[in-house]
Image 1: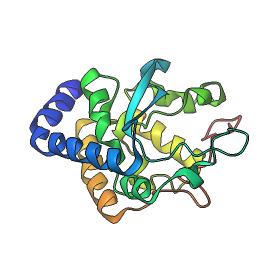
Image 2: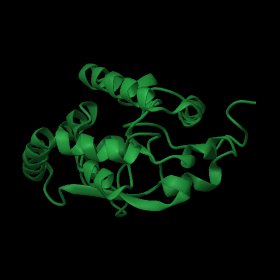
Image 3: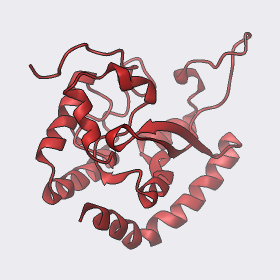
Length: 201
């Protein structure tokens, strides 16, 4: 049912997202150059790794030693706008069509975080990750990692069709208000270093 809902949602919203995808691709190409898309390995259902598609939001600026500058220094004004409005997520529809992502579920995180999860935190991989999720509508990036993981696990334990609809509705409100786009002092959210314990004891 969830997979059918995802495909139906993509098909029904096609007249809206497809022209938007094309227009944004042109805007990113003119504003940031090539490549237009940013892909990165992320962790999906049961720990399977896939490539997440997003619009590029940062430059490739490097220091004198050839190392990439911090994200906050490479993030452009256009990039900040795309992120705050969640427009950089548009290409993720490709992942939804492929089955890598669902419309609703825990956000897929970096592969390097895999060995850092506690047993409870790892429960987030028991469902297909999503474009939006319970953690995103309860703070987005403006929350601690422990809070974020607890929201993710709560979703896994309480998931239902009606909860997904509730999350979708709240997502639109978050995007319009542009709330919780980044954590204090970071372009998005500080890196996860591991907690070494379950989020909830």
